[in-house]
Image (cartoon, rainbow, N blue to C red; front, side, top):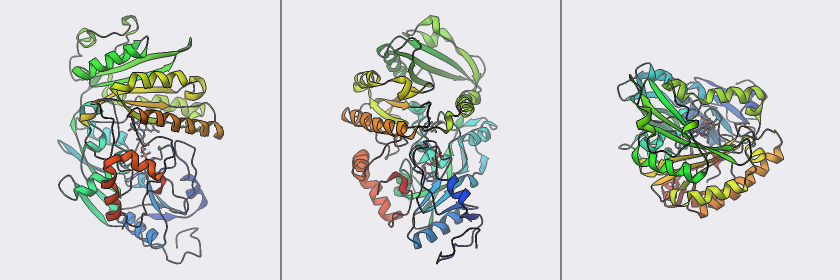
Length: 455
Ligand SMILES: Cc1cc2nc3c(=O)[nH]c(=O)nc-3n(C[C@H](O)[C@H](O)[C@H](O)COP(=O)(O)OP(=O)(O)OC[C@H]3O[C@@H](n4cnc5c(N)ncnc54)[C@H](O)[C@@H]3O)c2cc1C
């Protein structure tokens, strides 16, 4: 009998390659995430030793009428990987990375993108799209999409997966791809964990550059920054363009683009890359850094937040997409309503990242109608652990999301925001029927990933 298993448990847990833990420390440890807003204590914690463990434990959990959710790195912000009184699986025990082929690599879903990238770079390869923070699990980002600086060119991470091994809500191991079990494949990619648990994924790879030339460009206002975002989205002269709006020391906001050109060998021509841009030339700061160091740039920020304690404070982030036709008026109105000191915090920022909708093919990631869209993210990092302040910002997220939706925008579901079943249905739009059909087929008893509260 596993240690600390409640004695009244009628059906004993199945034999496992890994371990099922019921002790208080393991359970409490899984009742938190990067949001630090929702805390739901599970009944037990699976440390899977194999995909079969995931399958057997889902079956056992279902027999007992409980729910089940995989946990990657628990960097979601609103309890999405938690299960009150159910079983959570710590997928980080399934993290092996296979041999790197010319155009692909097979990884277990609990691997972090940083470790995938280290392995592929050793062979001169890279996944085409990487999130701004690399310590997220492969499974955790494939089920939301996975947006990165190169999304405009290559789509989201879930557009760059060749096939997956998935354990369904009935505890069956199924392999799926665009040509085999395509319904499951399309319901799992950006499908918020509703149809299956990803245990393995074959990821696309492309040739990796050695270095990047990085330009931080400053603008006096939103209109000027947007002008260049449009220009650069049209001519693709950079490999990544990301906008950030931060509180200016003298009040108001500062507007910045982080534009990156990949290269190997000779560095690119600065003047050609910067020709015709409207930023302030006096503030340009071109630098050359290694490709991995550039992609891992969030690590330094993480170290600061860990050291000052803010990593462990609530993070009521809101992430959305807005179409180009509405972006200026919506963002200006939201900036007018923001008090950066308390609504964003000293390390917070507003991200505004141009994305070509046409690059995205995962059917369950709803985007605005315009081909040029922007990820508009309120990266709130309040300097307080006060729960009532976090709740105030969650309410503010809801109000902002409503305004964005009215303007034709969509939600990126990694946000800290409560959503009713009807709101989720509305969020997915016509694609909901596809998700619903997959749920009926692959998780008819609605065992999986209740934290999103969709079904
Ligand atoms: C600092 C930081 C930076 C971020 N930057 C970006 C970014 O640049 N781009 C971006 O797109 N997102 C970004 N995110 C959001 C992030 O991609 C999502 O929150 C993601 O879901 C977290 O992955 P995780 O491994 O921590 O998953 P968890 O938080 O553990 O889980 C998230 C959801 O995925 C499910 N899940 C986990 N593993 C699996 C699996 N194997 N199979 C099926 N379902 C699974 C869980 O049940 C849960 O519902 C960022 C988050 C943080 C905290």
